Image (cartoon, rainbow, N blue to C red; front, side, top):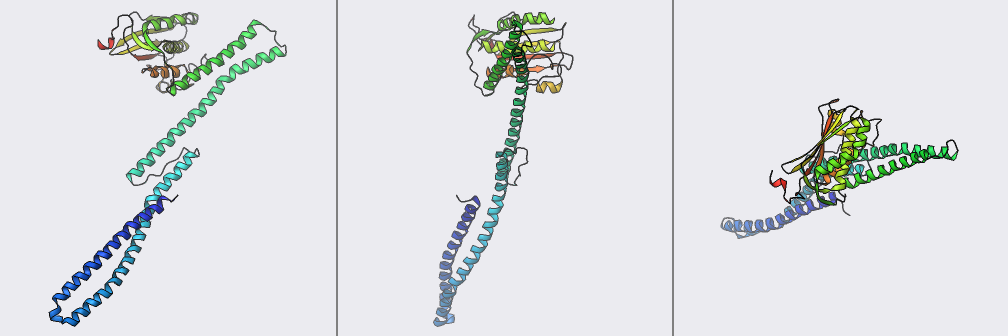
Length: 371
């Protein structure tokens, strides 16, 4: 396969040689005709023999002059073509070398920026691609490390318990088996959560949507977690009276609500409270989960939805740090979102689930049209 430089050089030479050939042919014909006409007009003054001799001399010298001119033009054209082809190809070669380094995994680099606007745009796009690949690689490495960390504790518990049973250090008992089963369930939930998160990121979550009442779903989720709130000494208040129709996957939305309520419970100390409010306005249904817990800093607001991120207040508490990530991914799969806000550390936090409203399953009208 011929290189781009050779093709550019050949194309420039072809254009230059074609132009030279045309100039020689046309110039030779015109010169011969014009000289003959001029000498014909001077024939009376010069005499017929002298005019004919001059015309013959011009005709004999002209091809040689044109030939040397063509050779000189071709040489200059070749030099200019070589110079221009190198100037065009050199930036492309630098970009190609950068792309080779990126392909080998060297993402942290600055791609040379040519002076040409089009090539500079290509270099900028390549550099942005390298930066995104670098971030993806960092995320992948961090994800593997964090998954390994999350798996280590239950696996250590299972192995320690089973070795103790095998060595008869502890007696077989329902408590020992329950401890192993609980850690195995923890691993199973981790695998399920990671699978859900992966499918959500790839927009491959299967949603079985149907008309639902978001207020009823919020009340059911709160009822499900009410014993845990009572045990932790955290008050749970639900303001979800009027129906709020949506078209959603009931199980997925319930999973989102349980994650939001569980997150609020984790960050709220005994004596605090969590309030749930459901409403709709201008075609958007919302569930607001407000807690009086540890609150969030500005940095934590940016990172709270990252995989496995756990703020300082949550470290040491139960959980895997991906509940909010899953909640946001599932909400976005429904065309909605989950957002967070907080006045600051120690002032509590608010998480809002937003979803498009749907037709009322009971009365058959769309509240979005009435807003």
